Length: 80
Image 1 (tube, helix red, strand yellow):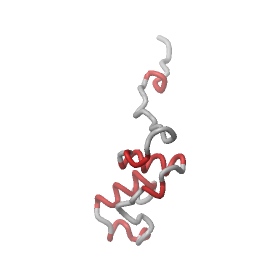
Image 2: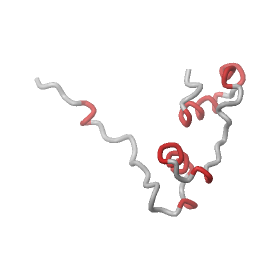
Image 3: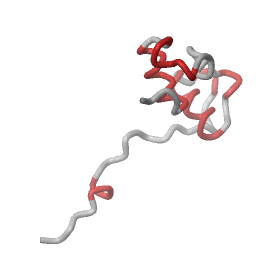
Image 4: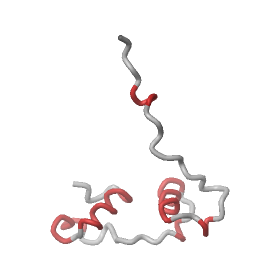
């Protein structure tokens, strides 16, 4: 039995958005966020639903579950 490369067998989680060729005003919110965060394009169009730095020290007590989930996924904070 040969060891199997699990990473090679796994399909990509999603197709990486093309941040360079399409009209930015037609982008879905998730694409705007991804392109802003990963490539630095479209950031002025990105409206963040939460301020993930406000009361970060007390997020467990003061933030809603929705805000914690969003900030963890979008900015990598309040993930515990």
